[in-house]
Amino acid sequence: MNTGDLPARCGFRVLVPGEDRPIRGIFTGDLLSWAMGRAKEGDAWFTVMGNVNTVAVASLADCACIVLCHGAVLDSVAGQRAAENGVLVFATHLPEFEASLALAKAMGL
Amino acid sequence: MSESIQLEYTVPGNDFTRAGEASADLKSTLKRLGLPAAEVRRIAIALYEGEINLAIHAGGGQIRVTVDDHQVEMILTDQGPGIPDIPKAMEEGYSTASAQVRSLGFGAGMGLPNMKRYTDEFDIQSTVGVGTTITMRVKIG
Ligand SMILES: Nc1ncnc2c1ncn2[C@@H]1O[C@H](COP(=O)(O)OP(=O)(O)OP(=O)(O)O)[C@@H](O)[C@H]1O
Ligand SMILES: [Mg+2]
Image (cartoon, rainbow over all chains, first blue to last red; front, side, top):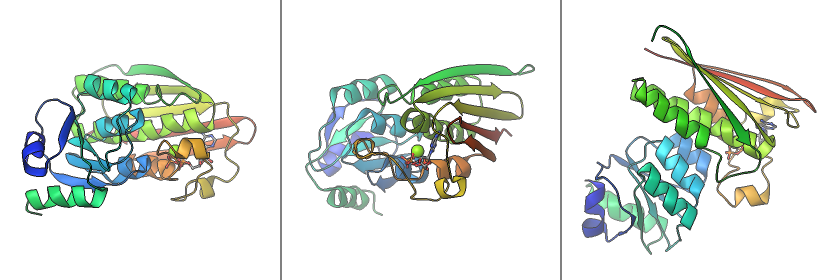
């Protein structure tokens, strides 16, 4: 499963496009230091926090992408930083659990 | 790399849009120097947590990084309020972060534990009313 497959396979919308990346796993949660400490390289990160700090953590922890759930918005500073740092951002109206589950099913987990 | 490389950063206090710039810069510098990706990731994670703590808890501070053949050393210094009870601050879940900072996703009380977890050597010296110095080292190869 690659980030490029997310729109077709899970119905996620592209907010910040970027280079296609393989997805190795899933991390779900909103607290930045939990994500920083526990997300693994290549994880798709499901969260509702659409600020610049989320983008910084995704970039430093080498997440495959951010998926903003519950229709949460990405603020403009965060969108700009994501584009600069090559962080892919997707959006969905699904809650975090359902969105994570959709990807897990698509990955055959 | 025969000689060591020194990098210095100043972290402004309470600026959560800029906090993270030092870690991002160090990460790209270390990648460019050809350090192994796994170590670069650990260093970036540890420095980000330290950098954010400088911004949130200390009103800003200084970061000095020394890169040589066998390790990367990061020294974070601030003239903030200091940490009265270091063992307590090191506990997972302990945080004095304000509601405003928590609303941004900080304040899990996991920053210092992450810094210890992701580095090979970790030390805090702190004096209340004077400031805090954190030294972290990650071995290379
Ligand atoms: N440089 C510092 N100066 C003064 N106090 C600090 C400093 N760094 C950490 N602390 C204190 O230690 C506590 C724990 O720090 P830690 O980084 O683990 O958690 P946090 O910053 O509160 O939340 P998180 O890092 O999970 O977003 C802080 O809440 C703060 O009280
Ligand atoms: Mg912290």
